[in-house]
Length: 100
Image (tube, rainbow, N blue to C red; front, side, top):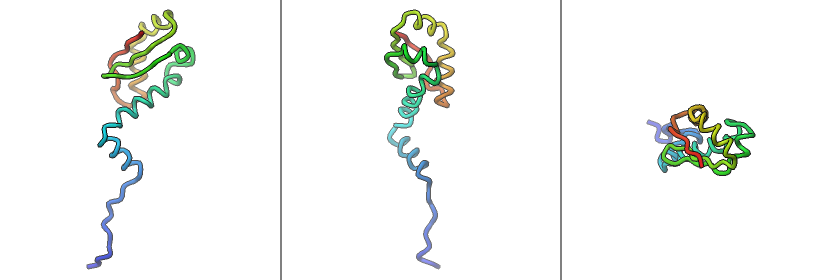
């Protein structure tokens, strides 16, 4: 038997990072940051420029807008926002949207 023979249990760097992120519970937070960074791409420049604060807490997307007209329009399209965010995240990340 060859004692110098190594057992092949190699993983790619990406797999190792994914496992590490899951082990420390950071994978969900990374997806949240990805969604927030893609806000303009998802909703367009007009909505993005009026959005002053955005964060996700307990599966609720919290938005602070500087336009009451824009806020009223987006309230009517909550389901579209939820759909776009969840599609971008690749999972059911949010279930509701709150405006302020």
